[in-house]
Each structure stands twice: as structure tokens, then as C-alpha cells.
Length: 183
Image (tube, rainbow, N blue to C red; front, side, top):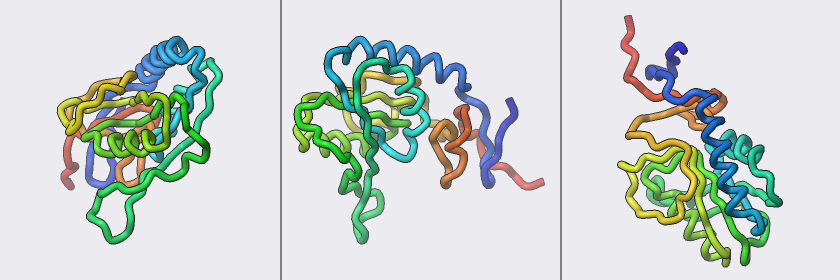
């Protein structure tokens, strides 16, 4: 596979689509067994989760529902300060929720999502994430049940992950290998 360039950054293949699909099939099997009689609600955190969630839901063969949320911050607050979970669109009282994330990095946005969902009276929360960076976590989570791949501190794009809004559509995941120098 050939390297890709976005703006002045160069990326090389890290995880190919076939590996991603194999891992998603295994996660789907686990979810089907654990939630067989629970009618879970899958909550995808936009924008990054869309490809992972679409492929994951193809592997889930039990009765379930799904929705998407987006994290928002209020204007005039400190950059990156999360305040609101928007878009659930259904009652989650007493429901078993599976949060679907593209990547868990520091865990800050995941912690906010979990706290917001707990306030809605859910029965349980588990997390399915395509990627996790264990060395970057600022919080301890006991409900990250499904992990596609553990990665180091790499900056990655593709399969829903972007750089400046670009490359979410790529089927493979690429990692940054440095800055391209002009010739």
C-alpha cells in the first residue's frame, strides 16, 4: 500500500480493512452473546464512529435499537470543554446502552458521554471502541468491554477518523509518519 499525504503530513498504512472487519466480527459475536435477551440501544458518538458503527451493526443479530449523539460545547467557554450531549432522541430509562466510539484517547469525551447517559437513568453502559490509546488515558474505565485495537500515541486517520475533516472515508487506518518536506 502506498503512503498518503494530507496537507503537509505523510501517513502510512497501519491497519487494513480486512483486519478491521475480522476484529469487528469477533466483537459482534461477543455482543450477540452478552445482550441476547437485553434489547440494547447502541449510541454512536459522531462524527468518527459512523464507519465502525455501520460495520458493527451488520454483525449484531439480536433485537436492538440505535441512535447517534454529538458532543457540544457552549460558545464562550474554554476550548474543548464539553457541556452537552445532543441527539439521543429516545427514552433510555432502564435500557442497556452500548456506546460506540471510533477512538478513546484521553477518555475525556467518553467520561462526559457516560456521565450524561447515567443521568438519563440507564440500566447499564458498556463501550465498544475501534481504537484505544491506553498510554493516553486520563481516567480509569471499567466499562470498556469491546476494543478493536490498542495503539500507541500515533496520530491516525481513515475509517471514520479525520485530519481537518479529511480522510474519514478511507477504508484503512493510516498513522502519521512525519511532515513532508518540500523538494
